[in-house]
Length: 358
Image 1 (spheres, rainbow, N blue to C red):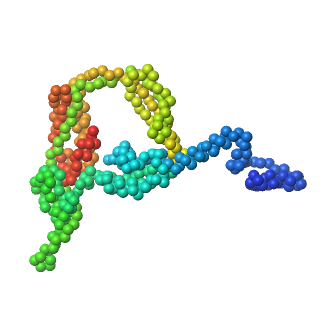
Image 2 (cartoon, rainbow, N blue to C red; image 1 turned 30 degrees about the horizontal axis):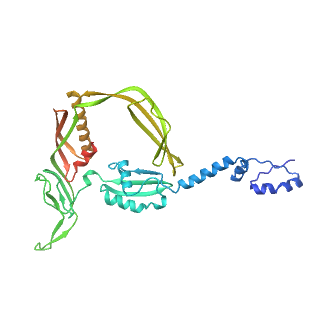
Image 3 (cartoon, rainbow, N blue to C red; image 1 turned 180 degrees about the horizontal axis):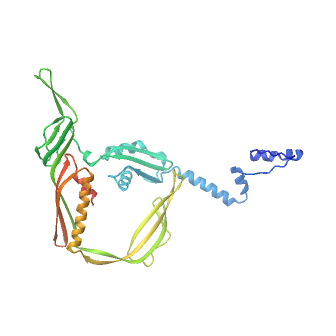
């Protein structure tokens, strides 16, 4: 009767059993090999494979000592490009050594210099620098002056006011001008006999809405270069290593073209990003013809821009009561002007919305 026993032993112990097997007339069958020593033993004569493994290991080790990717999360007001430019201005970029990255200093710089950031966390995961932030809304930006008073950013009529801290200087229905103090940073507290009044300094806090008139201006050129696509396309690839790009093809026989680049980093798992990315480049050829907008076409473009601006206002908690857009041609341009009847927070900064419309 034959008896079968399964066991797991090291490679060294396996070879030690040779004499014992001979004496005991035991046959040993290797079912599976899963040890790096067996792997190297199998390919011990194929030095190119061993060298490839060694090279890959060395490259992974070197790559893990550098930051090869920067990722952002939670940023809406500040775009990825703006955040990346900010880091570059402070000496942080891909290719930096991980040990030279001071995450606390980066967090402090972001908090001190980016006024709309209310919370930030900077960390290194593998060789990826990850920056997570929270941003304030536009109506929370400049709520108080340096001395703690709340001032009006607009001329108009107070429609709503709730004071949480400080002394209100206006009530609903009052007309105010830009720069007026709406809530003072001082609390006046009378004593029990209401003879003496004590003053306490505080930080003024309040929710205030002002009905005011906003304006919006934009323009476009009447004559423009019209792109007519020929239908000829080309797809090529490139390899990007840090700041260097190696093209694997060239746009032959294409004169003028639009270029769309899709780039992806090569990663090992979720934590190791290799300093290499592959770019897929799509080229779409076109020819330019000079054309001129009709009044209807210009009006459609400018009205769409105005509607985008109104949409941005609403997204920033601005109530639109009414608005009117006037469009006229002046020389070689179409010019648009809008008068907007709106109810806005007292400290709302409309310039932020105008910038986002560009």
